[in-house]
Image 1 (cartoon, rainbow, N blue to C red):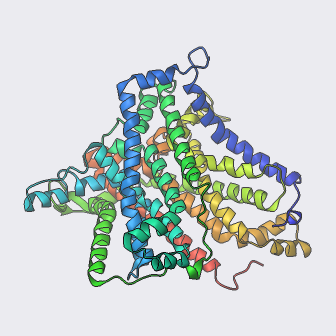
Image 2 (image 1 turned 45 degrees about the vertical axis):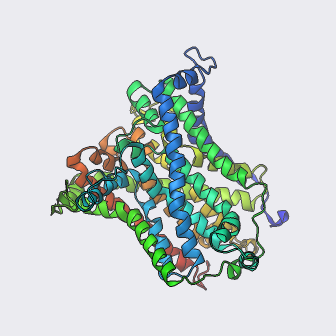
Length: 564
């Protein structure tokens, strides 16, 4: 876009930029900075590395560090074993229901991983449905849900869609001429995949793998629900909540979580930085689908069916649990009831209402800030405006647990205006944590939407006498509606299942959202039925939001739907 056609850096642009920077500094940089600062200072305020020496000097912390690293790497490996073949088969070969298979493969993302952990224990646990059948038929059990192995299993199933989505998109953009040239030179089968297709799709794979690593490394709910505390996130939570907000080892743990999250994202970009993955054609020149032979088709469908069974097992398990009156040492529940849903609707309506309030406000704030940043970057000549994007995107590498600890540290002893209530007991902090953590998702959607709005449409409106504000309100925002809604829904549905920040910032059950309510229910066997029912309602809310956004996006793409 020519520089001269952009709006100048007037006082309005400066005011908007100042407001955004102030928000991000107060609710992102300062809280995270306090966490990092506290890890490096002693009781007198002097800089020290002694806390790190104490951390690595204790066996429980060394064990937790290496366990988190091992589980994260193992989860990336096993998630890749699921996602890479699934992406390759559905993109490279003709499959009936390929789109349905890819859609079902993404479903794990709509369920919190700690909820899936409980369901998977009922199905794959030592006394779960699968092991009971194996014991009856073959006389042995597979302890796949025990300890760190169980955490790895749950995390791999839940987060592999990040690799799947990125890899499918990357493979679809590969030029078919590259494949044809390799075929003419004798490359076939796995050699073709290993030497041509997968290397060209490497940027998409690494982007997804980095996200899996970061998500697993920072996850708090899954280890806690499974009784595994010898990992970094549970240790940070336990130190802050049991020892106190001033415990330095909790901050050292948080700094390590931040460091490895940033390192994973940096390495994913660094590996591909100096290599050329570009191809000459897109769209119609993408990989050509090929037919599978008879026995290959049987093997492929069999493998996909097995993968989808494992992937959808958490959803099936949580649905059965929500109706189960008794489910213990049996393949299926012994009796069914609707009482759990009645219980939830009677006793947890406030949690449902809290979730809607917090997530709607957070998502609304995200799209407002995201649209404003997109406008500043793409439509103004404001100096250093690209740093707004970098600053907002930092939240992607900050664990929710760390941000929540930073809020507790920052607002310790501060009361709300016109009242004596402490800020740290306010639900506003929960909402702000949701907004800051999900801002990168909304920002990406808003940037993409504005890039598709040609500046000549805005110039035409201003040429007809529209003020800048009227042009933004009547032309720019309506034309961006699909992208804005996509960002809103993405922020909303991911915030609805957030637990790491929620569990630290929720000061009472009256302020708790659904994710915290599900966690509380799941802590006792007697409450898992209502917890499952509440989880099903959360999944329904997320699924309906996703469906509504797709419907709206399609409607905005219909020819003739232009803003006036």
